[in-house]
Image 1: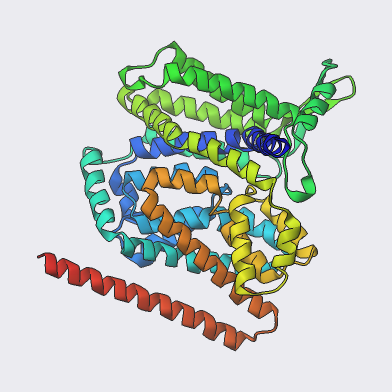
Image 2: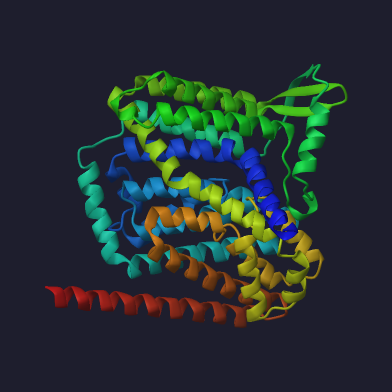
Length: 483
């Protein structure tokens, strides 16, 4: 019974910490962006760069470039991935975008370089780019029939849309601005320009109670629930209650609950951007640059949304709500399960199992990444801790390649978008490529020269190219046989 209670407490604590720290400024804007992409952007605008018929030398680098600009975690990238895939992007470029964005974005690489060193960051971006494109190409060839069917379906769904209007462009850019303003950890967004102390004597006691309910160790990348986080969770529950009444039948037109939902969402984003710090005898409210940036971006969203036709506005809100229903529950379940499993896995096991650059050590590191998920930028100091405790740099790179991609909640959400079969193939390829990346980098750290390393990497690429050619030849044979 004690073990069951410990597991349940761990799952609840993990879920509370995740909802308090990551859902609002990251995931909430992502759902609205995904809905806008699905409802307002013509298919041709996506397929021009990411379609399955676009030349590979254009679509795959474009997918990686788009992912490199988004400093978001794997859970946030899934709604964006769902948006471009539903709109007509080929499975290959869409998968490259899904893979590259969490692990290879500019912020993650810069932070990796500052904490683990420039050589580690260079290895991470090189392998993310090469293997992200390789995984995308393999997925496109493995599932070319499904991709063609999906392409035809999107032709039917979105054939009537020909161009992106100025209001739709403005809304989409404003939503992206909300996401960037809420996630980037750069000056002046992090600067506090003014503060106000409220005489709320219970604030410090409530914060101590929350830390007692959800204990955490920042050195291990664990996150507790702050007073601000508890307020945000309460607001999130209010949004959910209002959304069921205001968004479920939005196609028939908005009602008062629709406006309550949107108002609560905007208010919650602003509260999340504030600096709320319990102090002796009160609560200090800090006006940060992030608040100003989020407020300006939200005003721009409201301005451009008003200019949309009523049908387009309702379609955007419906698509956003559809993505929430499709993905969010799986996210909650996944985070809860991960929180329970984390109570059973001890970091000391990884230190003892991954102290050398072996196949087993790299496989263990990849498996560890599935159940010890840390948000983007948090996994880097955790990796530093493992490195200091004796983890070999090879398995460490394998972990950093897999952790942003293969968290349990991410796999559940991806399966809801592309199905279990494609998700299983994607997970297997990411695990394989992550292990290979760890082995190659670990061999270089152990003294393997540039020439042998280049030959090994070249051999890997040659085997991948041969496999791609073989798959392509089989596809041609099947097509010829069917005709």
